[in-house]
Amino acid sequence: MQYRMKFTTMPKWSMDLILEFISINYSTNKRSKLSIPKLDSPEEFGSWVRKNFPTDLTVTEKDMAAVRELKAALFRLTCAKIAVEPLAEEDCNFLNEQAAMPRLLPALKVNGITWKCPSMSEVLAQIAYLGVRLLGELRQGQIRKCAGENCNIFFYDTTGNGHRRWCSMALCGNRTKVGTYNRRKRGEKAED
Ligand SMILES: [Zn+2]
Image 1 (cartoon, rainbow, N blue to C red):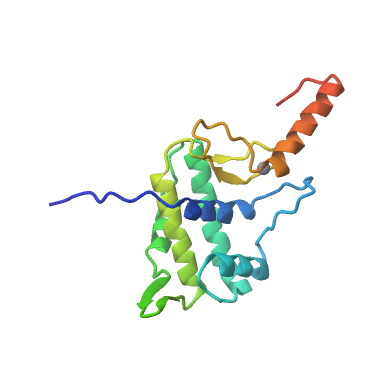
Image 2 (cartoon, rainbow, N blue to C red; image 1 turned 45 degrees about the vertical axis):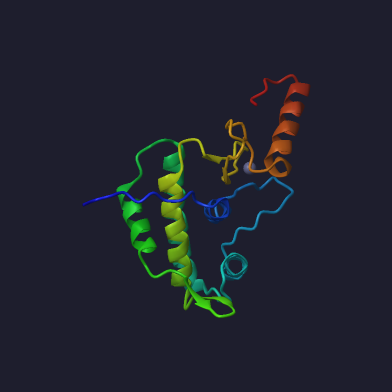
């Protein structure tokens, strides 16, 4: 007999984590005075990994090739999901293969929990697994891309009415409002 397993709702922190993973490398918010970490170097990405996963691994330049490949596939899939387009089968297969690899393994101890994380491969498998769940479980309109010019930051809209437009008010919201104000002042047609 076949039956369907009903998944619990994906925790918001893990959705945020995946959106942060795919956003950061593609942020091209050059004119912003606020700096956005690119996380494209082994050092920067390593500190992001150690902050978000129970590991003290060091990331090498060799690891970064696999990181960028996963990031690019998740980026394309998320863009397609937002555009309500069919997901590319090749990217789906790649993500599923990654997600099927051994992930971070928790072990219960008498005094708490420890995590087994022998290499970066487990971290990437964990990210891919969360990516599968994010893309598979979210409904249309729940993930959005910032409306800011040249900003490729994704976010999960928790407003309930789908009204959130910016990655953050400080980063893109205010900048766009200032731009619109200046255009109006000059008598140009506002594009906002
Ligand atoms: Zn933005």
